[in-house]
Length: 218
Image (cartoon, rainbow, N blue to C red; front, side, top):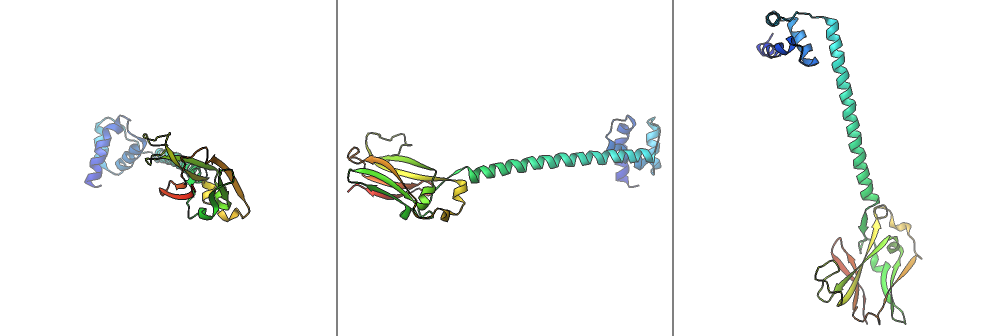
C-alpha cells in the first residue's frame, strides 16, 4: 500500500470507528483494511471490530450508485428547466417583441407617404410592406428640436411631427413579400389650417436614429 493511501485512511479511521463517516468513506476504508495489516491494526486499537463483508461492500456500492443516479436525474431536470426558460425568453423576443421598420429594408420610400387633400386634411398613406406594422408611434418636435420625451419640450411651439412603424417579431423575421400590392391604409393626421405651425412630417427610425422627410408644408 502507498504511504499516501495509508495516511488518508488513517485520517478516516476515527470517523469510521465512530460510524459517522459517509458511505463512500466507509467503503474506501473497508476495502483498504482488507489488504493493509497496518491500518487494520490501527483500527483495532480504536476498539472497532473488523468486519470485511463483501456482501456489505456490494450493498454500499449499490447505494452509492443509486445516489449518483438520483443526482443525475436531478441535474437533468434542472437543465431541462433552464432550457425551457431560455426557449420561452427567446420565443418572446422573436415573436412578441417590437421591432422598428427600417426605412430602406422595408422599402418605406415607396410604401409610406403623407398627402394632403383639397380641404387641407393631411393623411398618412401606408402601402404593402408598411401595412404590416401593428402600431404607429407618434412623436412631436418643438422649435428647439426637443421631442415629447425631452424635459424641455415646448408643447406650445410644435413645428414637426414624426412617426415610427413597429412590427411584431414574428412579422419582422418573416417574408414581407407575403403582403402583395393593392393593400393601402390611410390615417388622418390633422388639418394643416388647424395646425399652421406644423411645417414638416418625418418618418423616424429610432433604431438607427435617422429621420426621413415625408411631408413639408407647401
